Image (tube, rainbow, N blue to C red; front, side):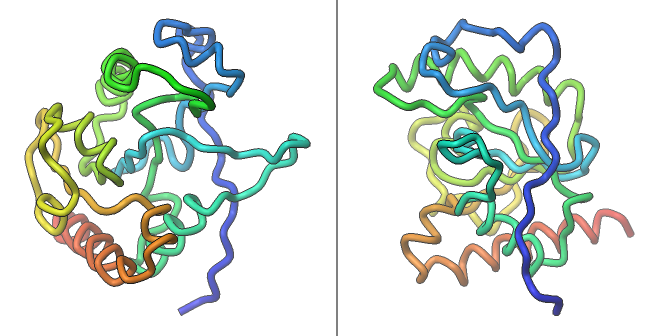
Length: 192
């Protein structure tokens, strides 16, 4: 296996119609809109709660812990940047209190627009926020859904823990890797 070296994946610009979107109110938080990153035409869509940060306080690009953990797991599973497109329920990082349920519901329109254009073969929801938002069920969670394929809104979908949860609780790493390998194997088998 080659050494792991995280990189900042290319960012996909938001469609012109959404650049200045203020429907959810997160535009007032001062964080910038991040539509997605990686390969916009990838067969696998990774879904996170929000984009976090791609720049430090001085505006210099950096690879945050979430992206490092995600990329390391993808590499260990044999997936590359070309296989993956990362996007989010919220397209901006919240920096103060907000109406979580209402904002997530409002922001799902962006994800639905992306799905209608991208039509990924597989979706991997990382973390309970992504799972509950995408499955549209506040009662489901990663623990009960991971390691299996589900049909959600017509998409082959699976789930795993959020990369930050894995960083905070290293005992989740073996489960996280197993989930990524399950996705990679399922994807490769679909190509046969």
